[in-house]
Amino acid sequence: MPEKQIRLITSESVTEGHPDKICDQISDGIYDEMLKQDPDSHAGIETFCTTGLVVVGGEARTKAYVDIESVVRRVLRDIGYDKQEYGFCADDVGVMVTLHEQSPDIAQGVDEGKGEFKEQGAGDQGLMIGYATNETPEFMPLPIVLANKLTRKLAQVRKNGALPYLRPDGKSQVTIEYDNGTAKRLETVVIAAHHSKNVSTKKLRSDILNKVIKPVAGRLFDSKTKVFINATGKFVLGGPPADAGLTGRKIIVDTYGGAAPHGGGAFSGKCVSKVDRSGAYMARYVAKNVVAAGLASRCLVQVAYAIGVAAPVGVYIDTFGTNKISESKILELINKHFDFRPKQIIDHLNLKRPIYQKTAAYGHFGRSDKDFTWEATDKAKLLKKEARI
Image (cartoon, rainbow, N blue to C red; front, top):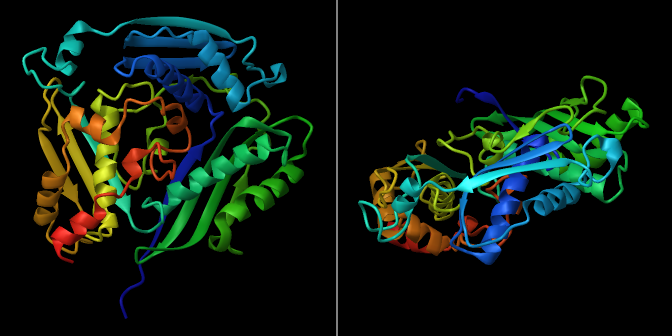
């Protein structure tokens, strides 16, 4: 009998009303508004929020006119920060804007026909990671899938009135028990739910357990599952008045929940010429197609760039011993059928569209939305055919 190998793997997620995610959505909301008017807009937009204040800074190069203050207030209102009693309200929060023009030294490296290399180059140096696994229909690790579903459910029951005392901020965390690599059960679930003063801790815990956790966890929840709901006893003060927010601080929530490494940069607020974003989307697209083709059960793709240079300086894969053909053959097929040059990524995935605000909460990967073109498995059949498996 083989030795039983039990592992506990944990991932977390945050709701759209978490301060860091507020900032991600504002940054991407502004970029979307630029893209609506000028698809060639370049941007690196950073947002900071705290009690009574949102600060938008960074750089941009665009022909668009964007009323940034209006975007900020719309995003806050859409999230649910629409009452003064929350301590942070779309109608009266202060908005400070300090955007400036993109550096011409960077621009010449990402514009075709300019700079030392005439082909559109990478907007920065760095490495990006893509990952896929066949353990879920989303080709994502189960812990982050469940964590994101829990925070989505928290927002859903708040917005549809099922739990009207909930407020926008919140977190989830799940620990899954794996037996020899197979997910068996939900070991621990942690929920932090922002709420009003007029609900008892007992009622909140009962409601969250029965209307959020159990519907999401399903068969994975059992009599031994540990549950921690608002473990400090209350969560009345939340959002930016309790915890300042900043664009780009939830990169593991945005990606694979810690089941795979992360590259050098965050995504939100960055235009698609910045390979931190487009390169990571492409790496996910490649990894997912490799797994969907059955070439491996798990696949990690690393791609790295030099600023201003189109071709990547390196592409690396790891299938963790799950490959059905040699990794060298898989890499050969990847290099044959996928083009990692920035312009080709942008064109193939059709990235110059105003789709990014909705990426900025509940993860950039494992989503069924057709606008998330990097989730397509359109090359899986071709890879499978050429691999002859």
